[in-house]
Image 1 (spheres, protein in one colour):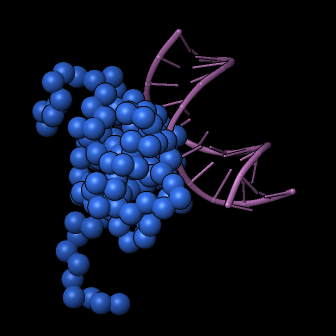
Image 2 (cartoon, rainbow, N blue to C red):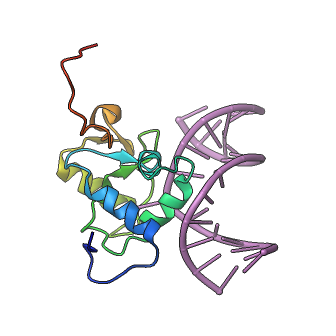
Length: 122
DNA sequence: CCAATGACTAATC
DNA sequence: CGATTAGCCATTG
């Protein structure tokens, strides 16, 4: 696949992280752990966090849709930091309360959702 | 190669 | 619920 970016970036690992974030639908959020797992390295949450933080395409990539595993906003390097991150999420339709995502688990995006949810109900 | 760092996570106090 | 500790992995000097 050709880089969706203009030129090659630091490391392939980071590209994978940013690429994964591209798939996050609007109005939803994901966690660092989910991305790490999606990349096949569920234990590399720290590395994922570093890669996301180093995202040079900040608002271009929905990096603001990435929150902590407990639903808290986490951190942000763009705009005014966490404040901007919350504002962006609210614009996406995500409810934020006390620095945490409301109904976090309900709008949590999983990279497995692309599986056709067969009629198997529970 | 070794040491330090970081937009994290889980467990403990 | 807030503060601390330890574990974790990729990046950087």
